[in-house]
Length: 168
Image (cartoon, rainbow, N blue to C red; front, side, top):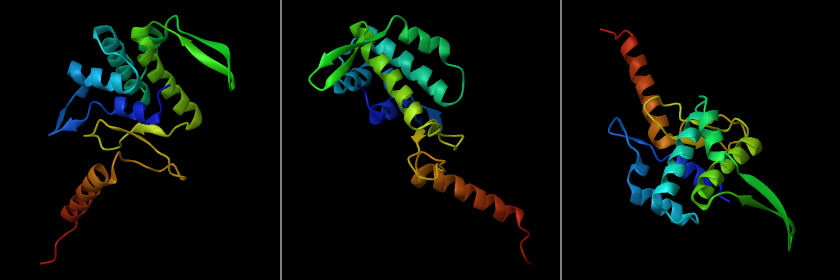
């Protein structure tokens, strides 16, 4: 099964660079590399399902409706219990080309269950990245304090400085 890190890699595969949205998964080799790193094989069908799942999860994590796409990814999937060395093990019954996409959706579901409200978009409106807030207070606002946090704080400071009458 995919973990939180794999989920964040997928969600954050559409960053903004030089003010324009990039799609790192537009390049088939990038998606195939990610898939192979996570137990997939690559190929057209697997790439299509991964892109669909990623897009749906970005919508869901942004608070927009994603149910139709999620239903499509999860259609006909079953989790089946089987006895194993450590007790009951759960196995997915899913076509191989859809397995990683389903695992991606299940990783998101797991995060939503374990850490409700902590997976969210960066508050920088010019950013398309997501963050998983693990702080005790659940107050993280930016994907990175170094980039988005500092930029927004600097902009607010400059705006206040412009609004403050200058002596003279």
